[in-house]
Amino acid sequence: MKRTLLNGNERESIERWAKEVVPSLLYSETPDDLAEVICPRRTKNLTLPVARPIKKVMALALFSLDDTLPSRNARAFVRCALLNVGQWALNGRKRRTSAADFRNKLAATLQEMLNGLSELAEQLGKNAVNPVLINDSAETLDKYEPFTSEKAACAVSSPPYPGIHVLYHRWQVDGRRESNAPYWLANCQDGEGASFYNFADRRVEAIDMYFAASLRTLNGIRKVLENGAPFIQMLAFSDPVNHLPRYLENMRAAGFEEVLPAGTARIQRHVPSRRWHATIKGELNGAREIVLVHRAV
Image 1 (tube, rainbow, N blue to C red):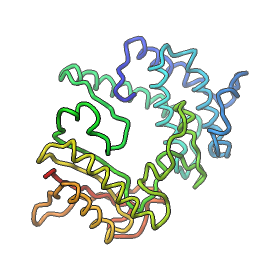
Image 2 (cartoon, rainbow, N blue to C red):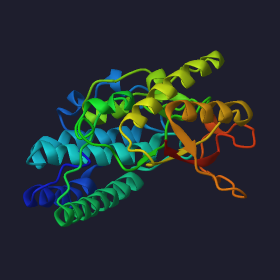
Image 3 (cartoon, one colour):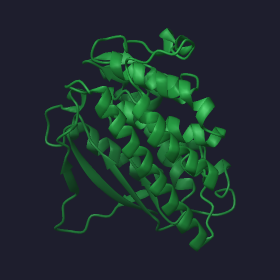
């Protein structure tokens, strides 16, 4: 969806939806067939008081899509916006988000996304470039075009952080109560388990699984990079004393050397909004990210 350009009719319909339909997404409204949109299995924990108004507004938004938007692409675009704003409103929030705040954020997000899509179309027109999105593990990149015939000149990545378990595929509502609502909004089947997205599960001993999976992906990235190509990553470490050296060893084993001129230090940044599950004590803990710069050798 991120590379799908919309035609004029689709853009106008989305703008009209944002202007006319979004303000009408009221908690008091209950169309006769609304229950058909809400799947209890896929909206787990959205019945909590903190989430119930947002669930209703999102259900009303989904209920309106078929009648107000002309194409699958336009509906998918709005679903992406609902995912973005739904995560903002519910995932890890300490304070309740009102339905009014949700509607305002949704309208603003739709306009921001449309502006971004216009910029993408302009750049693609100038450079005659057709971006390719590959939905697969980095281990298999060399099996896809254009990498079957040419190498990449640069790679940028933010892989899963070792020892830091993040629910990429779930929202945490009202504390630690997990919800699979993202798949409800996206209208797709629930994917893999948490270990798939984190390279390992939550067990302490699973750190060896993480580094084994990490090495496989790094090997896959190295296969599609030309010699000398820079590889830039942002990571955090729950146990930097032990995990950072192991990660650097993986980089060397995969065919990379770190670019760190003498007398310089790695770039770091503190992430003040990092949630409780990633705030772990340490020099480079889950709330402090670092940038690693390597080159393919």
